[in-house]
Length: 413
Picture 1 (tube, one colour):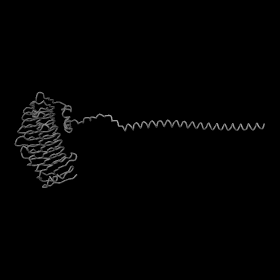
Picture 2 (cartoon, helix red, strand yellow):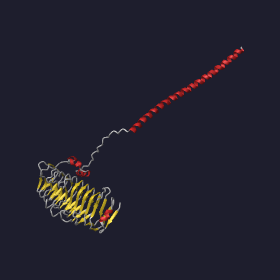
Picture 3 (cartoon, rainbow, N blue to C red):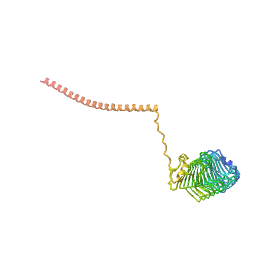
Picture 4 (cartoon, rainbow, N blue to C red):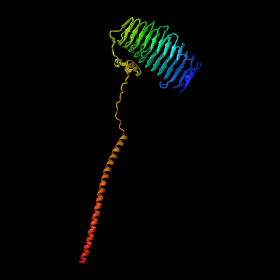
């Protein structure tokens, strides 16, 4: 792992082209005018290519990361860039992390979002800010991404379509916003237009005006949009609606949310959407506190458990699922692994022959043991026979001696 240091005036592109996985490129204090561009780098989140800015380092050329994975961006400050893609732009990237990055004062045109992402998977945007840009955090075609402790402040564009946080397109799903804030923006605080199955936890939308002026827009016209989980979020003092399904056809689940001081409805449903569920939500001081369909479920004293979550959460990436479960004070539990059936081992002819040989050897050993025992018995019998033969021979010798003595006595008589 190597460290590279880039001073103002040095070529960012040349130094970044030299760095590899595990290396860190440091941007020194001062104003850097070239674009910070990274393309075609394939690394992992465990061993990323890191770009880290020192305090006081400012980028005027913007940041573009494309067709890459495993990139770490830290403390980058992008200011007043003229790049058409906006301040920080991630295109076709996976497993990238941006920490403590700031985009500010990007010109107010329709394409200049402070932090823009397209075709992204499993990216983490942490403690980043977009200040006084045309749009805040704009994302399309995103799956498994998380925005945590991010802020969008005073985002306004000429066409009045400036959202603090927005996720577009029907293939965008299973994303999460945690402890984020959208304030003083022009259109919507959080716009989940045509996306589905997002999780929003402890987010705040305030002072959204004067265009749509909604705090949380939870759907859109696409046939698969909506169906989000919103937990402990606050929508306050916006010119229009606090929380709206925006005619999205899928029902959302809202838990412990607060709508107060909004100019129109606190909680709103319209269109042909399936009614949503509201547990322990509060609406106060709005133009109309509740404007939801008759089929909506409302329960202000409900003890929320994992069983209340919609079935789609089980299909979400584990880190998105865990965010929702932890938000209601429960601990995630991984489902038990499914053990594959154990197939009987295929018969191996060599192993079979070895087994047969072992049986034959065991039989032979047993037979030898029996024969050894019989031999011991025969040897014992032989010992007895030898002893008996010796006794007989001794007796015969005695008889022969007696017979000789008898013959001698007969001659003397």
